[in-house]
Figure 1 (spheres, helix red, strand yellow):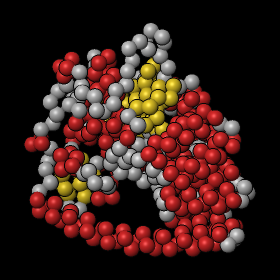
Figure 2 (cartoon, one colour; figure 1 turned 45 degrees about the horizontal axis):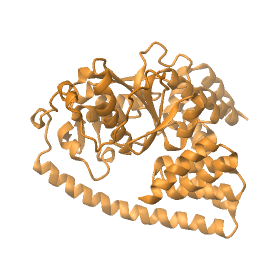
Figure 3 (spheres, one colour; figure 1 turned 90 degrees about the vertical axis):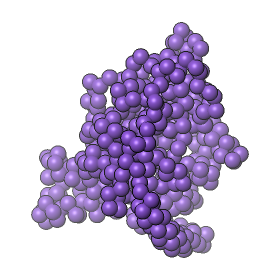
Figure 4 (cartoon, helix red, strand yellow; figure 1 turned 180 degrees about the vertical axis):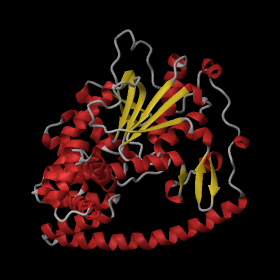
Length: 427
């Protein structure tokens, strides 16, 4: 009973849904902290947890595992460029552009926002970025600004040589970028969350709602809506976009990504236009732009370090290939169990696999299909949402989620998912 009480406490205080994050993971974290606290049984630990904010935060640190990297999913940054070029520079340039990144994890997202704005030619005095997270350990790393190769993924890493300098096998972000982001600790479910802050032009909340239960998502979105300026934009995970319509936000397409926009009055809506990235910046915008940072102002990566990085990349690719082969074998074994009708065992093994591989989209897709075969539609839908968050181009998970949403009767959300699926199939 105490385990369930702890799960309910976590759900109530920070929104975490044990069905999504996994009860086994919570149990392991609880046992670790129980031993550290020196208590003999879980009931005694529950008493400590209920009365100690410090201990509750320590447990949260073990449960919340950050998984992010710079410029993760390029579309939101393209949307930001579009907004700045087509709206902010044209209408709101006299005010400071305000952005919120929550949760910010170890800092990769808000720093990516800052680099995007600096590349557009904005000075740090022209924008303000608040970055909020519940984990003090993640915030400490973000403030430190030193990252391993794991934070640099994808093919376009040109920004790395301009905004970072190598330190042994890690990279330190430039002070020019670091000082443009304001980090602080906060809980999205706190009724006082950012209560006295100025409203924001753009809010990004892309990597937490997937872990929340339905009530916590509603509370979070209502709070974020309160913090959003009129005509401001909010970007959430693709599978949560439909929920923004329930807040009275307009769902608009901005550079290939659906975002929520706080509704305008008829007067404000006049001449409002969101251009594509292919549009040229109007000439009148140029006087508000300042020259981008010169490469000499940012520490450069030397040729020697580049060669080291190339060798390291080759070694990493070889390791990654072996890991992928092992993962495929494990998932195929689970898939065969499900095909043979052993759904309970297949679900159990898939849950165990995800306990140690919590960012594998294919595993969430597979678990969702198993749940669907067991007529556990709610759990299946949550798995498909997680798969899409981890892999936005996962058409199978998107199709499953679309069908489940239609069956549930959520027509507005299903329509958005259908449109996204059609675009994905045209690629």
